[in-house]
Image (cartoon, helix red, strand yellow):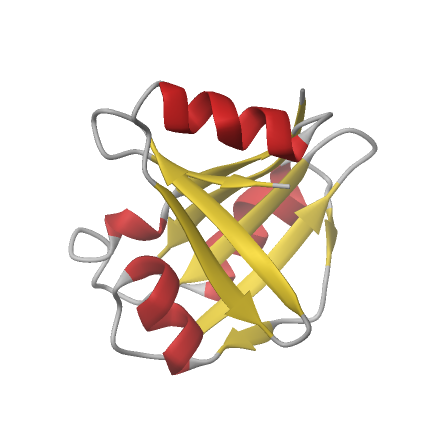
Length: 124
């Protein structure tokens, strides 16, 4: 299993840049928008979300800029894992009664699971 990225929330792009770019020396991508329908399907959030990726050699942070509503939108936080055999992993989820959610995104499908405490994991 490979940790693909960690998704966190920040109140502003400036705060995000100061920490991930200036302190951690990570490379910043161009900001992009997660459209409202996908935001609703994945996180049950009724608004567009600004996303900025910061990458290093072996680290990737996906930062959602959510203004001052940090407490209200903490459910955006998730961990993305890459598994060797997706079908075997999903079968194991089924056996362990872990709910799997498949969300269409263009010509591909996103796969998410929640642990028994509600923590969100994206599976690739």
